[in-house]
Image (tube, rainbow, N blue to C red; front, top):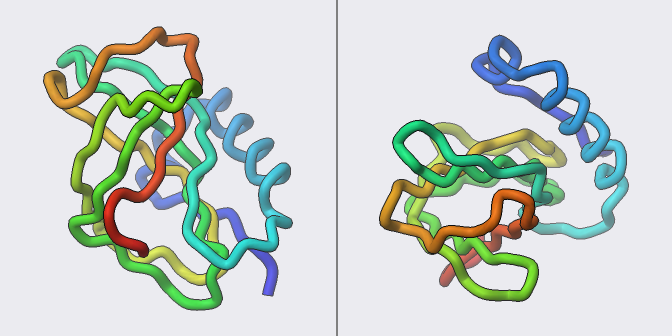
Amino acid sequence: MTQTLVLESAWEKQVSPQDRQLIERCFMETKDNTESSLSFTYLRHDYNHQQSLLVMVLMHNYKKVEVQCIDQLIDCYDLEGHKLATKSFSLPYEIPAKTSMPWTFIFPKGTYEPTNKETELSLSFGNKEV
């Protein structure tokens, strides 16, 4: 079973050509990973008009079974390993086996430490394994 890239219908309708290219390039670089876990590959981050931190990642389910994320703590770090935010998230659907999909995690203003927009970030699961 090979890894598949899936974009939810909302992503298909709204993703910019630049972001689609970034997602597809990242998928091609990570699709052959031999892990058997759920992980993230950082794509980019930004701040919206409400000053929320938006972290776009490519979410990978390398497992051979569907994965559900309910009340999952997600930690956000800068490249030096400083924790910038922790927030609980629930995804509205299961992530199919052997599937990668883009997702944006939103950390509202006041729940994160500000960072330079050019600094890469990383996300990891908090206190429980998915």
